[in-house]
Amino acid sequence: MLSKIKEALICLRAGRVTLPYPFVPLKAPPRFRGRPTIDGAKCIGCGACAEVCPPRLIEVNDAASTRTVELNYSRCTYCARCQEICPTGAMTCTEDFEMATADRKNLTVSVQLDMVHCETCGKAFMTKRMLDKMLTEFCPPWMNKKIDVPKWLWQCPQCRLDKTGSVIEGSIKNG
Ligand code: SF4
Ligand code: SF4
Image (cartoon, protein in one colour):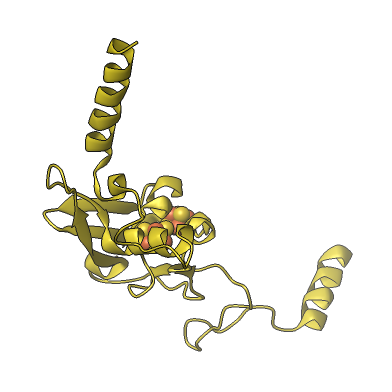
């Protein structure tokens, strides 16, 4: 009995310890990791985020001349691996933690990007933004991008492989 009275006194002294949420809006604390989102202006469509997402919520799909990066955060664990790996800062975890919705479509964000076609076979193989980033970051400013950049950059991986294979085959035949 005495222990119960003691417990009641402790509770009374502590005062109210719960928040009136959801009747009063609740702001997440600083650096809270919440719902991820993609900045369409920054995304280059590299697909790195899709590779590291543990529950596989990010899909990268190519159709004709367009690549779509789609994030469905219905089962997101807020691990932020997608944010850490993104090379352009396009993927960020917001402070939003409220996921309740009547329509599951509201839990999806997507970005569509134009693709580059292979100069040999015509297949779309990477996004224009990826190519631009490679040209900007790996080519020195004095380089004439139209003339000096290796031709294979505009070829899909399969065509590069085919060409490399025939060069190796030729050099083996020629001794
Ligand atoms: S925060 Fe984690 S689980 Fe959520 S989309 Fe990014 S990688 Fe996937
Ligand atoms: S969000 Fe970032 S990691 Fe994901 S496809 Fe776009 S640029 Fe790549």
